[in-house]
Image: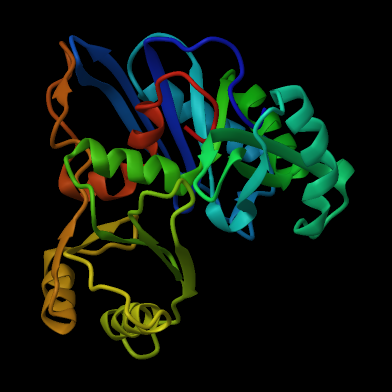
Length: 312
C-alpha cells in the first residue's frame, strides 16, 4: 500500500482525508495539459477522525463513497495523501551498487535507529535519487516510514468506498507538485488547517524543511501566524527571506487575511490556486471557486501524479 500499486492510468483521483472535509480531485492529461474532470468536498463527522487520521474506517468509507460519486469521470483509482506529521522521512547514503532488493533488506534493519515503534509495525518505502555529492561510490536514498495501522485504516475505508488506492505519499510532496504546476519554484508555503499551521519551504532537496505549529488563536490568527513565521526564519541564522508566501488549506481564510499577513511580514502573500493552469473537461461547467480551491491543493497535486513510486 505504501507506494505504487498496479499500473498508472490516464485518470486518477487525488484524495486528501483532512477534517472538516474529504477532498477529491480528478484530472486527466490531454496534449500536455491537465483537464479537470471533477472535484468534491464531502463533510467528515468529527467522530470519524482522531489525532489527524482515520479512527472509524466505516464512517470515513461511507463519506468517501459519496465523494467519489460526486466527482465525475470513470474509474475508481486513487492516490491518497498521508499527513506529514504521521510519517518520518530521511535521506540516507548507501553503497551505490546496492540493488532495490538489497536496499529493502538493509532498510528493514537500519530504520530502527529513527523509528519510534517496532519494525514489524513499519511500512517502509524508498527511492534512490542519484549519487552522493560527497562520495560518488554511494547513492542517496529517500526513505519514508509510517505505522502499518495507518495504512490498514485507509485500506478499510477504501474498501468500504469501492476505491482502489494505487499510491500513498506525504501531503507535502503533493502540495509542492500542485504549486509548481502553476509556475512557482521558490516560496514559503503556509498550510493552514483547523488549529494547526505547517510551514513548508521549496527546496532542491527531495525532503524539504517542514515545521508544524499548533494555533490556539488566543492572540488572533494573524498574530500567531506572524509569530510562527518569524520564529521559523530566526531559527536558522543567515536564512534568506522568501520572495513570497503562499497560503493553502482550509484555514487559509480570505483575501483580507492575506493582506494583513503581507503588511505584517513585509513579504508578498497570496493564496495558492492549483487550478489556474487547468482547463475544464468537456461537460464540466467551471473550475472551483477560490473558496473551494483553498481546500483542494493537496488533492490536485495527488491527481497530477504520473508513474513512479510514492516519493517521486
